[in-house]
Each structure stands twice: as C-alpha cells, then as structure tokens.
Length: 282
Length: 282
Image 1 (cartoon, helix red, strand yellow):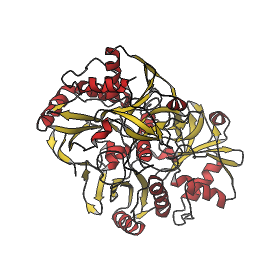
Image 2 (image 1 turned 120 degrees about the vertical axis):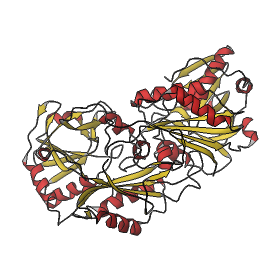
Image 3 (image 1 turned 180 degrees about the horizontal axis):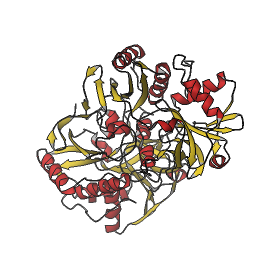
Image 4 (image 1 turned 90 degrees about the vertical axis):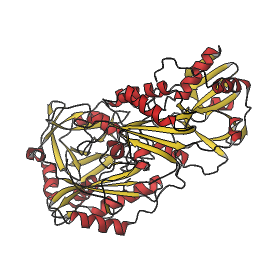
C-alpha cells in the first residue's frame, strides 16, 4: 500500500459513497502531481487543465482557491511524493442525466514516490501497443476518468524491462504513451502529436513545449504517422512524475538518446525555475 | 435519494475505498436489473453479459454462484425495484497496470422503482444526439463503466417531454439510445444495429430478438444508416427497466406506434415465461 494520506472534500477520509458518479460512470477528472520538497510541481498548469476538463464535462462549482490551499497543505508534510486529485461530478439520481447532480466531490490522495530504476532517466525500452485509441473530440485533451483504453493497452505486456507502450489511433497515427506524452526529434525539430481527436494534453508536455520554445528549438504539434517512428533521430516520453525518459529501444530496435532530449532534461532539473506560463489544452 | 439497500462484497455498506479501480479509471462493469415481485428479471442473461465483460477486461475471480445468491436475497425483500450491480477490478497499485489488482469488488445497490409516466409505454418523443459514439471494438457490446459519451449525450437536452436520445457513430450510423437499444421495423422485418464497433449489447435487446424469433418475425442485425430512420414503419427503444417504448415522435416528426412493437410488448408482459436461452453479446 502506497497511500500516505487521503482527503475527501477536505476531510481525512479514505472512502466515498457508491453513488458517486465518478464510480458509477467514470464521470469526472483527475490530475497526478509530483510533490518535491513539500511543494506541488506545476500546480497552476494542473489546475488549468482541470478547469478545462470541468468546462468540457459541465462540472461546475470546483473553486480553485480552496483547492490550491488544500493541495499545498497536504503536500507540505512530505518530501517527495505523488499527489493524485480526483474530481467527480458528485451524487446524482440514477441514470446518465446531470441535472441535480453535485456538488462535485474532490478526492486527494498522497502516495509514496515510486522507486523507478534510476537508469530510466538515461533511457527506456518501449513497445507499440495493439490497443488503438478511439477518436472522440469531445473528450480529447482532458484527463477524464474513462481510462479503459489505457488499462487494456498497459495489460498487453508484463515484461518489467519495458517501461512504456506507445499508442496509435485507428488511422495508425501516433498519439501518446499509455501514461505519457511522446516527442520525436527530426534533425533540429521537436515534434509531438496533436491531440484534437484523442489523447491527454499532459502538463509535462506543455512544460517541454515551453522549454523548447525558451531554448529556441523549433517545435511542431501535428499529426504524426507511425512510420515516422522508424526515421526519428530521438524519441522520448514524458509525464509529470517521470519528467523525461529517452526511448532507447522501441520494439527491439535501438534508438540513440540524443542531445535534444538531454538539453530538455537538464532544463527540467532546474526545479527552482518552473516554467509557469498561461497554458490551455488544445 | 432512491437507495433502498446497498452491499459491498456482501456486507451492508454504502461506501468504498478511493483506491478502487472502478473509481480511479472506470475499470469495471455494471448491470442494471429489474426486480419484479421480489425476483430479478433475466438474471442469467445479465450474468452472462457480465462474464463476457470480465473476460474482455481480464477481471478474474467473479464467481457466479455466490453472486446469484446475493442478488436473489437482496431482491427478495422488495416488490418492484431497480437492482444495480457494479463489479470493479478492486484495489491496485497506482498506475494502469492490472497485475496485483484485486480481488474484484462487487457493489449491489437496490433503488426505488422510477415513476415513469405511464403513457411512455404507448409512445415517447425522442431526439437524435449530436454526441457521436467512437468505435472501440475492444469495448463494444460490454457494459463497462466508461460512460462519458452517454453522459455528454444525455446532457444535450433537458426537456422532460423527450424521453430518449438516439446516438450515431462517427460514420453516421445508428447505434443505440443513451440508455437503451433501438429497433426499426421495415415492413415485416425487425432491424437492430450491429454492435461490433460500439454500443452496449442490451439484455432486453437479446430478449426481444428471441421473442421475435419465437414469433416467426424476420430479424436483421446489421449496420443501420441514420437515413433509414426517415423511412421506418415503426421505431422503438428498449432496456431491462423500461421494457419496450415505441418512439412516436423523432426530432419533431411523427411516427406510428405500429403492430409489431405492440406484439413484442405484449409478449414481454408475459413475465411468467421469461425467455432464457443461451445468449452471448456479439
């Protein structure tokens, strides 16, 4: 058990009602934050994405101020940890209708930091998943609780030496990793898939795009054909917890851990200087 | 509040752990049964679909015998009610991986019977939703907990005079209602959409297909273009709770409540003779 502390609607509590819509229909959103030296990293970006998700799902009444206070207070008690926030639509009558639901439920779980092998920062092995992502523009970009595609994709392999699986859409385009976003390097250009039909617009993805911009690196956010994976100069995955992991082997084929990923990685390590620009998922 | 009774893993309990995967990722399944005179209707069909869902999601360890006993025991205490069963994958470590998860969690909620207007059995008004269903063959047919598409579709209207919304896939083909399956009548032929790419293979849908077969009615389970809705002789929706509701108005256009729906409806009312053949979702 990795749970350090848990709050439901501000109270120390580890259980919720079975009538919560997040349980009944996956009707809610989540954020997974890295806590470092007692501070939640990139908190404003996480809350901005959460807000975008609430607007998309029409979940009203999530106030940013008290949420910030609560997250900061919970994080303050630990050194390094994972802080997961779930916002559900709250109780409702039986059935899909959202009228009369609420108020929204907020669940904050503080988990022990996972001990990933240290060498992953120098490079990981990855695979391409058979599970394809379905296009659903109404849900694309936001981090909602309907995650069965990711569960099925992650269940495709059990070899612990494989750290991540990349997912394609139904047209064979690269979208993301099961738990990460993905970047390709072609020459001097950094490329990441657009996420207007499926995928989660990750906070670390936005941080890296801003870092690249600050470093004067040309970036492209566009449709990425899977065949481009055979021609990349570098490939890496990222999320809020792992930062950036270079992919040095994809389905058994070796890839170089190149200079551009290393530059971005060292930029990320400058934890005292988080890039906190305005940001909104596409 | 419509809840009469609730059990979690066999114990009288209305709360579950926040670490339950059904909450974290919508990683689970559900069934909604009608209880009539203290007996769960079409129980074996519901449990067969549940089992198919468990196999698809690789949720092991759900034993049918104890589940049947528990459902029958809970239903025995009431006259008419709704019995909702949720099966979640259980606890897991943080992250999408399913290794080490479980045992599966079972949640049984008994709800008061909803008081739908009686005239709905003679006909309802329906609309065509703008929210499209995404194709995902890995999840098609089963009744999993990732239901945001249905939530968004149902949120499109608030007029209580409209009882159901029909949903199309991304290619403009008719799939189902937000909470029901749909049947069209062309002449003497009963047609219902195939559900190999999306949609829930409803228990009442299977009951009606068997009823139609028993009555010698020609049935077709096939792709249905939305334009066929303009040419139908009859249209109706069904689910385990409502039975069969004829659609007598679709997006403001009148439709006849014809003889074939009426024949099937009266067949369904023969509650002492439930059709319980072997059945498996496609």
